[in-house]
Image (tube, rainbow, N blue to C red; front, side, top):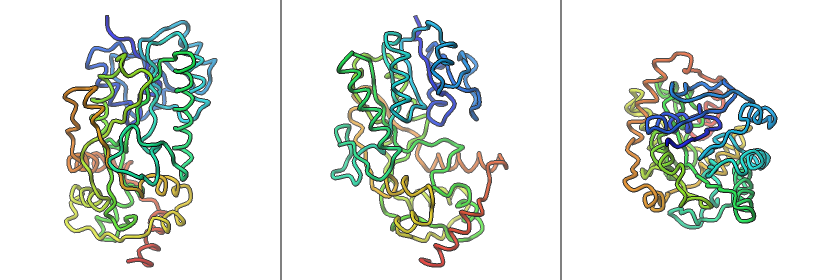
Length: 327
């Protein structure tokens, strides 16, 4: 019989690729979300509509349904996970929590990062919440056998998402010949994972009993500098020599209300991931989409969709101010 899987979410960057691959591989997929996602769901998936933050609404649409696997792509706080444990206790053979590689120790004491690297992020509440979710699930597994499995993605992107914090504004500046700010000195290392590559790592682990109670990160092996990321995007946008201006991360954080934590708690730190564990669990796994290819996909998609090519005046002003100070 086909594996019966429930995706909570299903239309995000990560989950959309996983939905497509799951259906392609014959999984009996049900997707539960609010019905407002920007990405389409596979035609062969069953879709249930409910506010996932309303436990009563979730119980109503699911009834007594049981699943071999439940994957929650939109759980961000312990309350979200606690509600899942209550809802799916005794009703699934595997519960997959999508955590984050940003939960790993910052600053990182040793590279490469493995699954045994400590979880500690004093800079970013998002990461601390993910850590708290993992701790809750560890207790549930140890104390009652709740079949939790933790996945830690790195920075995952698709054609609709630009990995630079300043998004399309940065690309537009490149095309206009204006300088673009890059944090630090541009040489810190980063790992980007195309969402279809992440799906190739995650989908084969659905229903795999060996991973219950465990955690694994799923990332690409390509290690890039932030200058390299910007230059690949510039090349894809038809800009041969982008003008990159390096600004200390702390300065950018002070100038970016709401964006400081994600920079100081994640992107400002060099990362390299050891994917040995994933490759042991999924023999033959390989991330095959280079970022040069991914960048071309991003630019082509934005060029074909004018609504995505939004230049933010606030970002534009901030970039000009930082370039004046450090350019």
